[in-house]
Image 1 (cartoon, rainbow, N blue to C red):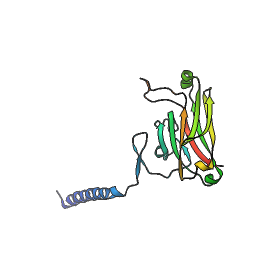
Image 2: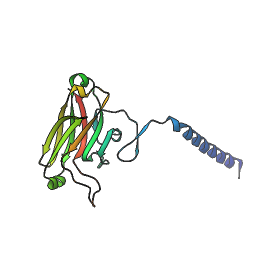
Image 3: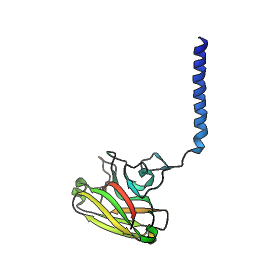
Image 4: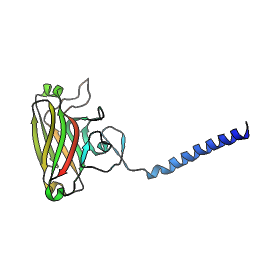
Length: 185
């Protein structure tokens, strides 16, 4: 083996070892991670008040009851699902509005006949809407200022009817969520 080949091999080995040491040294300095419903760690991103289901922050802001992203744009909900949202500026004084952009599935509706969606923060019910036809909807409910005094708030949604898991689909199927938002009045 020539000296040039030996030097090249030695340099490659040195770079490999250096990379390993740098990677090992950075382990303690990574951003905090959270476990999302999809079972994979998500990088700690700032909590936002308006969230599309394909937003990189979405997995970290899903508290429960939301399935994996599909078609890079939407997620199935279960019968009970929740999001954590940032309280927008001024909402603690003026109140706010929570909205959920959703699709009521014809396949689900054929089996359950109607679905009533309710939003709540803690034990305070914010609003309810009944769906008897499949289609695209935006659910909206007022949020009192007293419920928006913290930096973030968990909004809980519940459906009175959803499809139970089956042999063909192990998920509980409620509605299809595409976006959720909390805005100041």
